[in-house]
Length: 174
Ligand SMILES: NC(=O)c1ccc[n+]([C@@H]2O[C@H](COP(=O)([O-])OP(=O)(O)OC[C@H]3O[C@@H](n4cnc5c(N)ncnc54)[C@H](OP(=O)(O)O)[C@@H]3O)[C@@H](O)[C@H]2O)c1
Image (spheres, rainbow, N blue to C red):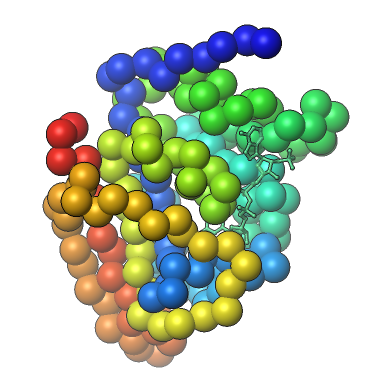
């Protein structure tokens, strides 16, 4: 079985949106209505970076992707992928493929966030001000290992039915 090693230098960032009860998904969709400013932030932050996602997140109607390249983590050798997406059989394999990049974004879902959190240098976390039913959740992580370097608060308005905050965590030692 091939072994892959994470290479020093590349920044590994996670980007996620969760509710106050840590829900990130419900039946393959976001648990809350569309929040345009959150999506705008997602595309601004991830611009020009490759993305890594789990097969279930790939296989959802709300699938997100990068113009510069995407890895889908799956154990299925025959799962069909659209153009612009490459298969990886583990998170480590996907990261190894991106080792020459300055930064790569892990974009979910729960299973992949759980595996990537110990490796993350930064976390871009949207905190939606509400409690929602979910079947996928952002894992608890050691917040003491990170410092919050940016926090922007958005109030609810006509375009945004819920208030939310955009938080950036940077690993304290990185
Ligand atoms: N709010 C957010 O920020 C956000 C972001 C992304 C996704 N989501 C939501 O999260 C939910 C999906 O999350 P999820 O946890 O169910 O699924 P997921 O993490 O997207 O994907 C899980 C799949 O990844 C593959 N996988 C996981 N670990 C692997 C490993 N070590 N080696 C090889 N393959 C591996 C497996 O695919 P195979 O079964 O094909 O082998 C597994 O079924 C959806 O509701 C989605 O909408 C929310």
